[in-house]
Image 1 (cartoon, rainbow, N blue to C red):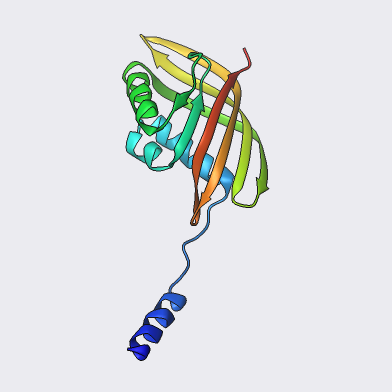
Image 2 (image 1 turned 180 degrees about the vertical axis):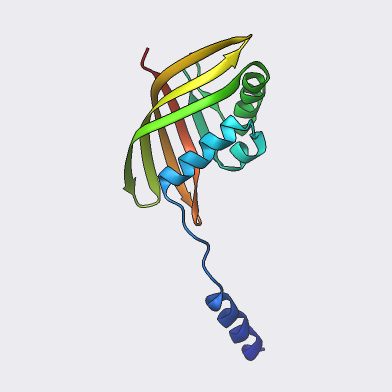
Length: 142
């Protein structure tokens, strides 16, 4: 039995580690998921205690269920046609990262194109080789 356990440990130790992604790479992955309207990918990257703060709603969106419902409505009414993100800033402390950046989002809504500039702040928690969203806040600059 000891030999079997050692063989198991040795096999696990010799396996390649999952490649870690940076907080910025994670945010870029999330932005691609939003543009693709990939709700499953978005939800799989949210922490169970997630909170979204969005400018068009005075109340924070708390929890995956609420966020799922709100995003389904958003995706049914809007299409993201472009997203430019610049000026990334990252601060880490242990297993938490704060990522801020400037964005310009282009949307189609009711046959019209909207251009929405702003700043976004993510608070992320380390989850294995990746991250999970604890908090996401959009702040318009116009």
